[in-house]
Amino acid sequence: MSPRGVAGAALVAALLVGGCGSPRSGALGPAPTAAPSGTAPVVGMPSSAAASERPEPTPSTDPPKPPSTTPSSPTSTPAGGTVTVELWFVRAGQLVPARRSRPATVATSRLALTELARGPTPAEAAVGLRTLVPADVEVTRITDGTAILRGPSGGSAGRRLREAQVVWTLTQFPTVRRVRLDGADPVDRADYADLLPPIVVTGPTAGERVTAPLVVTGTADVFEATVSVRVLDSAGREVATGFGTASCGSGCRGGYRVLVGWRTTREQRGTIEVYEVSARDGSRINTTSVPVILAPAD
Image (cartoon, rainbow, N blue to C red; front, side, top):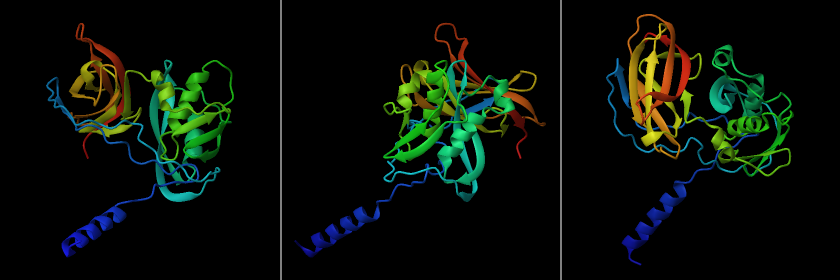
């Protein structure tokens, strides 16, 4: 081989070795990362005028998770700072997400289940969120990407919704891809995907204080993947609208990200409505309403 060929081969080998990293892990799953990025934002304008553009495809909100190579047992060691976990509650027989920020711990799975059993905040309960998960549900270990659970207890009524809450909450962590409940076969998010509403809003969450411009995120399975957003003030007046497209739609679920802006001079209660426009008559359907606090820009 010529000297030039030897040098080129050495450079390629160095790049291949240097580009690899190791997955993060923890006793019960590491602190969750930031919410998955969605599609390119679409800016909503005050009143009914809104501009749109087709965003780049968004990855699924259930990202690939590296397996845990070592069985783990529940522990709780403060790591400093805070951690934000996603909780999946129930409303009208469907799954609805919420978030909690708590002191950081390596036992994020235990933290998430504790908060799930504790139930919704007053603001969340006011819009119909509730939990079916009892306090005795517990992760005993996580092995090769499967979380082994003891419990949850409870009767057959609402059992599948209760299981779905646990599965969707635990599989947010990179070390958990599946959940084994009461010795049954492992299950994952796909086994309960039918319990999602057509439009899921992951941000903002109920009771959150928001300022303009606001990024509204979530997933949707709607006609032509078109998601519409409007902002209502404390009097129910429409102060901003916007729309965008999910990365998939009309029979498949995709992520969306819409940016809306409005003007306000005082802090007040408001509502973010995310909905689908009916192809039949143009009415708003499959609406998800999120009560928020509209605050002036800082």
